[in-house]
Length: 88
Image (cartoon, rainbow, N blue to C red; front, side):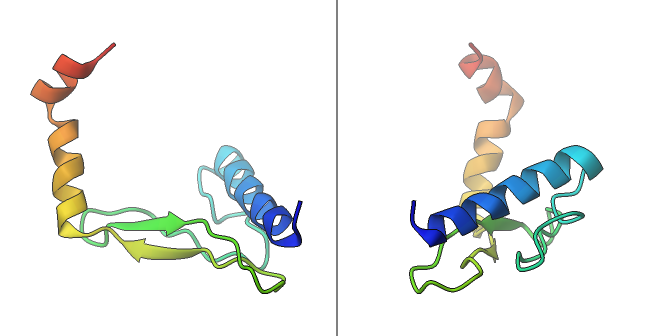
């Protein structure tokens, strides 16, 4: 493992265990991890978990806004008539 991979792994584990324990991925996150804001139709933010290559003690993880195109694409796949046809 590289140090950056171990740091990213700890961050991901922190988000998951926090979500399981408190239903909020940010409640018990590691101290250097960014806050994982709730997804809302207005904000449409998602977390991008990314490692750094410079040996820093924190990751390059960040929140980014989902584009209109991506939101429309997801809305298509979540439509009831489409999901009924694609269920296994």
